[in-house]
Length: 190
Image (cartoon, helix red, strand yellow):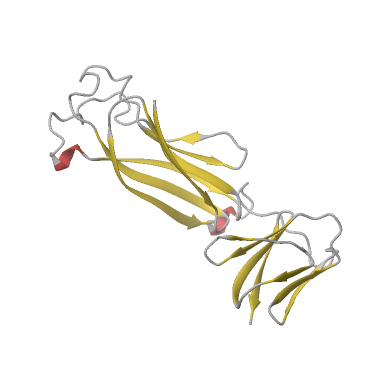
């Protein structure tokens, strides 16, 4: 079995779709063996089960061409999934047959306005009931009132910032997302 994968961190909470072009020629197992044309994309978010897209051809071998050079041989594979900001995501492709892959793209679709209560949405607590306060001063993100909360900080590109002291986080000027347990706060550092 062939597997190719890449680990990334979700830059924002919401819906994503991974797409890639794939093609196979008649030399891979056989034109009548629909079970072995099993190439598919996958996404594994955090510790959740792996999500897989439809298999290449999904039981239909009419897409198998005798020639790699045929531009009509390319088919699009996709897999949709949801992720919270900062969650690790492993993206990739699996296949037990010989296949070519190209043009991987990860697209973020955000959270649909009518779906804020869907599982992908963040659970928010009332600001009045929070036991902590987030503010900035002189290039430092300060978080007062923390007890045992998990704190993660991400830059605008979705890269996680190393946090040595969760109460005082030194950062460069820019927009950051501070995740405390499951609540995310946008912070502008000037």
